[in-house]
Figure (tube, rainbow, N blue to C red):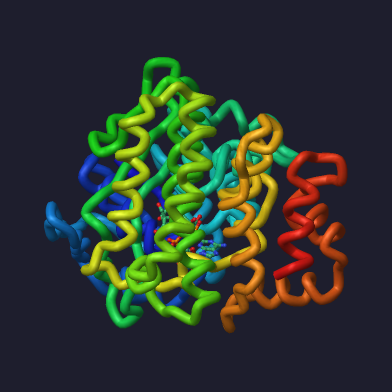
Length: 373
Ligand SMILES: NC(=O)C1=CN([C@@H]2O[C@H](COP(=O)(O)OP(=O)(O)OC[C@H]3O[C@@H](n4cnc5c(N)ncnc54)[C@H](O)[C@@H]3O)[C@@H](O)[C@H]2O)C=CC1
Ligand SMILES: O=P(O)(O)OC[C@H]1O[C@](O)(CO)[C@@H](O)[C@@H]1O
């Protein structure tokens, strides 16, 4: 069995690669980083070091890599012959890999089984977004694939670029929407198929990602380098817990999770952020702030829904305010964020960046957070 995975970075090697290897797939990584591709092709194996109380070292074998910039035809051929295609390139990059997947589907033998396509990105409906890009101008290819949304959870910090081994936390969860497969889902023992993905993706994004990003933005604003150090500050820990109390209310009300079990899930997320063996930084977790301040992302979507229900949003709005100070060098979106803050009025900023219009119950509080930052 063959899998093609776009994006051989942290999640690509430290999560998808190892899970598909354990499921019996040969994994072809497709990336645009020439040095990384060469390094992967120079190795027969790499090690995923899980750190934490239940960590193990897992050796991954049976892979190769293709540079889709240098050899796009090879990438198309790989997709045409694959059983599964996955990606972890970042939600904004999916439109660039879509043409390769489209051409691969077009080149696929007519008698071949339908290709499973799954985006492994931090976004609601990421595979739906990928599908839109793939079928653009070629609606016929949709019938050659099964597109399934997924929810991914594992902290994989930045890695030593001199090798291809990966250090990851010992926890992981991969929930996959079962419904598109009509009873014929691929066997992936480390994933779990669910009948309704929405509770899983929202619980994950609005707990793990909301909490992590809140830590990062308060930490960055206080001049702190690592996530673990930021959580040593009682006022930052309190801000993170307050944000998660707000999202917890929403998640429990909307999806009917048991409140105590959900409280444990949130507490465990904070515990995971504090993993002392995991070197992770406020700059990495705060990366691409414009994406994170977007309408459907980890602050605005839950805050908007809470405001619509007349519930508290102070802590989420405070985290949104802290994010506005994010100015990490080498982060294009941070530079763009700072430029937009200079160029736009607070009301324009809230509408343009976060998709909240005047008249929405969250509009005034977000606008005030921008004005008083
Ligand atoms: N690192 C983590 O802890 C987690 C990350 N995620 C999500 O996974 C996705 C990837 O994140 P990371 O692995 O951390 O990022 P990363 O930056 O380590 O990896 C992304 C890879 O995509 C490659 N890439 C960029 N453009 C490409 C293109 N056009 N074609 C093929 N490859 C391309 C890059 O060269 C890089 O190797 C993001 O959506 C992120 O939100 C989700 C859960 C955890
Ligand atoms: O910041 P991004 O690109 O959304 O992804 C990284 C995030 O996802 C996580 O892996 C959580 O699963 C954290 O590492 C981090 O909060």
